[in-house]
Image 1 (tube, rainbow, N blue to C red):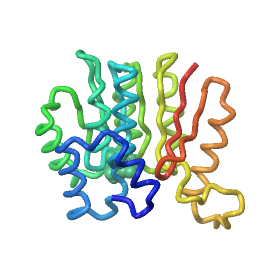
Image 2 (spheres, protein in one colour):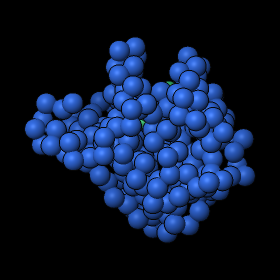
Image 3 (tube, helix red, strand yellow):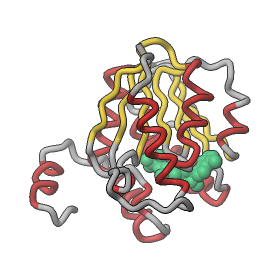
Image 4 (cartoon, protein in one colour):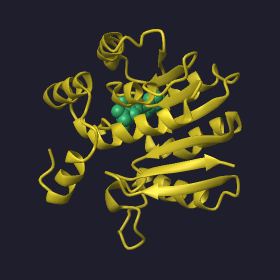
Length: 214
Ligand SMILES: C[S@@+](CC[C@H](N)C(=O)[O-])C[C@H]1O[C@@H](n2cnc3c(N)ncnc32)[C@H](O)[C@@H]1O
């Protein structure tokens, strides 16, 4: 729960976290380093709502962590839909599979353990309705370039952490060695000017960028 009263009010007026996801949030905070990497209540409900609106047949997530966002996105899958999610860290696999099974989504969520760049080369025949890029931020641009031609017209791309703790602002004294910040800035500037896209940057949490392919 947030200490900020307005955020608390907003959370109270957002559909509650389903019990399995609340359990995953608790477990993440108790057992994992950097629990804030998980999408969490408000963003998770937004991912679920967007997915329900789109009813995607194919979803791609790059960066699974605990599987929290994958479980939210999968809520809106079409009856014959499938979600592919890619995670580089094999230590995360058992927990992800445990929660996917507990949600009854083992047939709907395909987990790939490996580096996104390599796994994406195995998925070149897919057409994506919804893509969530949320892995190593220095490669946001690479992942975007690798998937954009496979996103159907009208499809949605979501990019997480685009405000990068405020370091995207021009007066933040970024060091040349801070490759993540430089990459997030460059990516945000590039896609904002891309004529193939409509974009909305939602200042939710650490910033969620919504890109609709025209
Ligand atoms: C911010 S977390 C993902 C959170 C998840 N999408 C959610 O919202 O609940 C980023 C994850 O990306 C993974 N990752 C980092 N580099 C990667 C790569 N090259 N390929 C695939 N996954 C990667 C990390 O191990 C980490 O678990």
